[in-house]
Length: 131
Length: 459
Image (cartoon, rainbow over all chains, first blue to last red; front, side, top):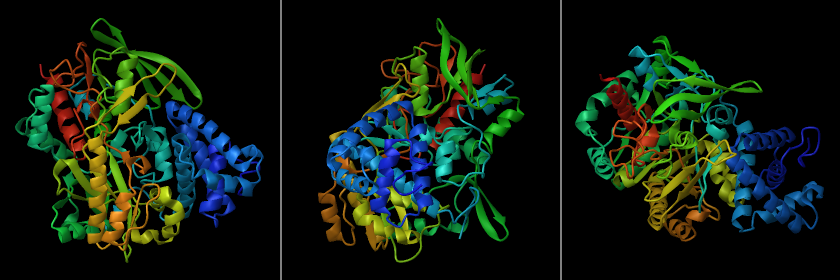
């Protein structure tokens, strides 16, 4: 998958698509595999959410999709990866409560997804070693 | 605790657990994998409100004990007196709780770090407190320390390492991947529990009859289960938490060892405000910087010199837990009061002050639009721009949704956990604590739970 999220491993949800767009802005050196892992993490996280919260995310996704489409002047899913990144950057400045919560969610999950990959140099169980 | 005591008393016990059994030590602490396997909702649970407050709950055999840091406090005499007065709780004093606390402390090896050694992320906090003349303590934990190849390692005494195996050894049966959907009531008795069992993609319903039922599903799931069972009096309306603001503090040397959890807490301001350290894996540092990522993002490259710190308040506000028709999970809400907002602002100010005193070269507050704080002057500017609605508030201590006491106008269960109006139904988890106590609540909860089962078993 490329950074746009297209390909056989493409994100299932709008949230993951937006998360990938955030990453293009926030972590420009993210590798393809890291971006793909982050998108999967966003999808999995939304699937694992409590159903009430997931219903709320669906509503927020609809509002965000509208905002992203207006900001990009075309339906978001049809925008190019570069345009999606620009739209996501513009949406990050929108102060509407639902949209800003969606923005916070997708950006946060995307960053956790990427930096969890990068933080894997420490492996092991839960025993804490004292210095 | 409950299952073990009942089983050892010779009762036939079935423990029903919605999640799975995850072998202790098999999952990296505070990792995404742990979130997905051992936290409810993958760790993405939230109490809706303005602002919403993210919370986390353990889900799986052993519950919260498997994922928390095992920090242990005894409740203060003042707290027990306040609870007892507000809800007319009988027999809840330091002297009546003493032997229960002592029992838990012995069984779970509650102890401090050997030789007073602290992880560096705690050490800096201690230095900051000392520089300001603020009081603090290295909080004991339920941990066993042992030496492996010359290195002292800490092994948390979680329930899957302690009470659950003992319960099973005493004859209790444990069904994992099994969700209790409701109690079946006949008059004033619970006669059975309706279960949804899961094996791979397959789910099926089953009823198990019971002579007594203990509900220990935590402060969101316990009230939801009771409400689905038709038990609504004083259930789910008094959610109390410790709302928390956080910062990333950066030092001129390495402080971050991802498996460490700071055990030092600053308690200068009593129960209403506590400071401490949070899990600080690289991904969690990134999450804490996320609200102001365009300004803060570059700092993540220095994550080894950074750690996450929090300020937690006792809240005047309250929330609700409501089981909704058609949904599996309850709707959780929380309303901060004006006093709470003022406290959070004050808490953030003091936390920044503390981190600068601790030698932080930069402090990154977790709210949208924040700037980097490097000096007291920056701190004043940061506070000018702070609002709770812009902050990523979170909490881990949820209590109060089925409070105990003899006041049937406000309490859901009696002084020993029995549901008002039900002869053989009990709550024995954090739901029964009247409000969030201003300390890590599990020490209090374990002692009260032990006391309640003992009262149940008394002829």
